[in-house]
Length: 531
Picture 1 (cartoon, one colour):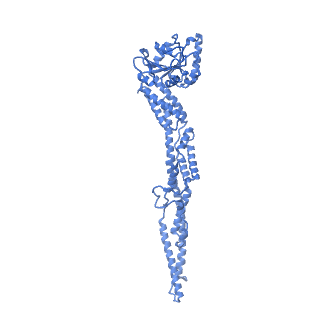
Picture 2: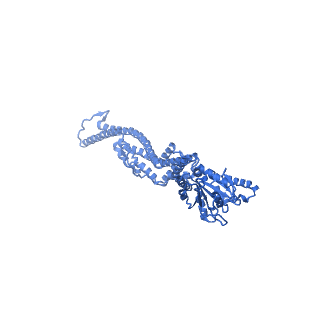
Picture 3: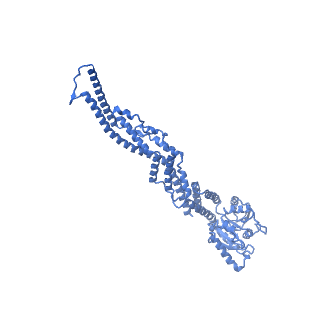
């Protein structure tokens, strides 16, 4: 495995985080993360054979003089006029060209130093970070984002300056492994005061978050500390680790912001109980109890029409089928598989919308407990109760239920008996009418069969009617029992259909978003674990 493979893996992980982070991580953090992935990938393409060290500091800190002292030649311009350095200058040590790397860094001013002792060092002299010229500050800000090692040059007058500490040192407080501080112009401090000055600087750096950072007292004027600085730079370049360490520090920095954005716990998928509660709530929104009651009433309506006493069935027909009043149709057999259609159930009224909103709000409250505010808002947006597809889906769920026109076989048998009894009554009435006509015309009565003194036609009329009514009463008990079963069955069907709609338009999108959140947290955890 190459030494840079682990950091490549972290960059790849960060790239995945960027893809998943849309809407879950602040845009500012994502922009920083995307920029880090882009520049780190390019920097790693240039390899680690060269280490880029930036000399940065305030006006008058003596950066350019120090730059010349390290190079052992008068390369950078230095003098009284300030700011002196307007663009970065580079010197590459050793025989290997760093032109490709310097092209990417956009540093046109380049010099070569053949010193093999510092082979691989690319030393940059940056403009003053506190320059009055905005272009100078912009050049510093651009390059501090991409160099491998910071070498901050301070002087006795400005080493505690807020522009340096607040603007840069605190900002890169997590980059201590790639930070050096050169306390330049030590010749201006009385010798007995130098240790306390260096100690004070160390305390300031600790407050900035830069612990265990080496401070090298130096003087470009007298040459003090130059050899130590050269040795330190040569050692770090020889390790070929600075590039990876710088990128790792950047990744840690972004990862800390990502941890803050992703909360303290993993979101959990919607539970089965919450799913059931939503299904019940949506069933209530579509009026499942009322529809089920109407289905039971329709079953009773049709049953009574099938098994009732034929001579009074027309009374029930004066009222419409309860289901037809809701715009629903019955089909023969089981639940219809016909294409879904709209119904007259008023799902778009304010009460229905409030019901949908309440049901989903309860679900989101449970699922989003403990999540960051941005994530809770994301879940609410994902399960938008005003989503027209949800209301339309609920409407279609009712229409596609196709309440079955279940006609048990015993209805046909009872209906046949009732019509047979009706025929007996009708025959008895006709017989009695014939006898009345014969008597009207004084024609002798034909012989009649009697039972306990009751003539046969009279027995046919009263017996058939009484038996028909008794059969109708008993059959109605069976019809009522069937209506109760139908009411329960239809309610179960509607709950199942609305559950499917809820799963499609609420639960599935929510679980997909929650899975994205879980994966994002796992990737962020991986970033932190591999530091």
